[in-house]
Amino acid sequence: MTTTALSHWQNWSGYVSANPQKMLRPADQPALQELIREAPAPLRFVGSGHSFTPLVASSGSIIDLSAFAGLVDHNADEMTATIGAATRLSDLMKLLQGIGQGLPNMGDIDKQTIAGALGTATHGTGITLGAYHTQLQAMTFVDGRGEVREFIQGRDDDMIHATGVTLGAFGALTRITMKNVPGYRLRRQRRPIPVAEMLDNLEALMSAHRTTEFFVIPYSDHALYVSSDLSDQPPSARPEEEDEDGLDTLKALRNWLSWFPWLRRKLIGSALAKVPLEDYVQDWLNVYVTDRRTRFNEMEYHLPFEAGASALRELIKMAETQFPNVYFPLEVRAVAADDFWLSPFYQRPTCSIAVHHLAGENPQPYFHAAEAIFRRYDGRPHWGKMHNLNASDFARLYPRWQDAMEVRRSMDPAGRFLSPYLQQLLSA
Ligand SMILES: Cc1cc2nc3c(=O)[nH]c(=O)nc-3n(C[C@H](O)[C@H](O)[C@H](O)COP(=O)(O)OP(=O)(O)OC[C@H]3O[C@@H](n4cnc5c(N)ncnc54)[C@H](O)[C@@H]3O)c2cc1C
Image (tube, rainbow, N blue to C red):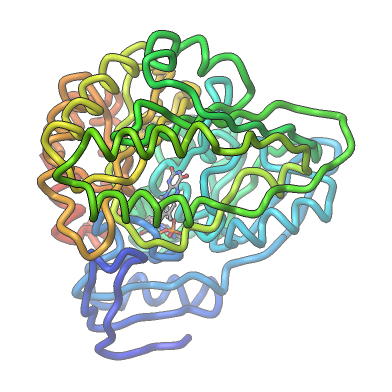
């Protein structure tokens, strides 16, 4: 076991930090069991620190499970793979490709661990496609008593549904089995679309492709409409990424023109009209993810699918009339309903809307204004992105909340995983 005393930890955006008594890296399961019994509480597990909420922060112990990574086993007939839970998505993609399997969908980046992704219900986009946790077939935890617990789909369905979105609150997740799909190829397209056209047809546009995503660009009256569909065409070159250049341009226009919104609108609008259409075919693992080099903070709420357009209208108006500093696009995605008790997609087809703010600038006034709109539409916040909800809100938003809390208490009776933030989140 590696122990680092009196260390400093911070998340990807630098917004959350902690000075735990110990940072621990157990080498194997017995060492993990021992430290769960003995290490100073609260015990919090860390993946790659890409959450914007203080889920990982602890004054006791932060536990890095990176020793539990890599392919353990796979079943080619059933398209399943058993992997160490701390495997990074970037590694997972390659190892699945190596055994002829693929992830049915992915989010924007591949830097997270799969356990971290399961920790917060990380998702991609596609109204028929579920978040990562919907692929779970089996999970192995070390619980708050230091005991190994294995749950298997078909035998322990309630436990899988209770613990599949983990919040790092049920135990240390060491191993999972995922149901995958055979490797596949996608045709990805991107084009600008007028915001009015997008809002008038949002549900139809979101349902028109296997994956769809909109980036609404403030002060432009336009969005970028990105979609992908299965393809059997030969691969073609994926264009160089321009996202970062685009952000720099939007930031410069904000800095120069925040007093002249009409000019900003005109310049962005005419620049967007010249954005080259993107249209290429590639294997699944070369399509979904991008490199997000600019650091930001983010709030994302998951709304009933049919509420998306109305909420977006309000959000765009709010951003453009009250926050001339905003230049990051609003990101709009769709996610299929599922049956996981702590999933924001629980029994609800979803339209997810995210707002971003440059790291180092104060995001709170903009995020508070956005949150007031999200809440009016019964939004459930992304567990890993900024929000101000607590246990009493979740008890109202999640029909199986009390059942999930009962399972949590049974797995962690002494509250070893409860940091002050987790208490606020989970204890009404
Ligand atoms: C640039 C960027 C892009 C993003 N894009 C998307 C996106 O497209 N879609 C989306 O939904 N989200 C997205 N996110 C959010 C991100 O996917 C989540 O916050 C995810 O949880 C981060 O994974 P991580 O490995 O960094 O986990 P961490 O942030 O380190 O931890 C997250 C949670 O998982 C728990 N945990 C981690 N490992 C274990 C373990 N082994 N056992 C038990 N609990 C564990 C932690 O205790 C914590 O509660 C993005 C974030 C960033 C910074």
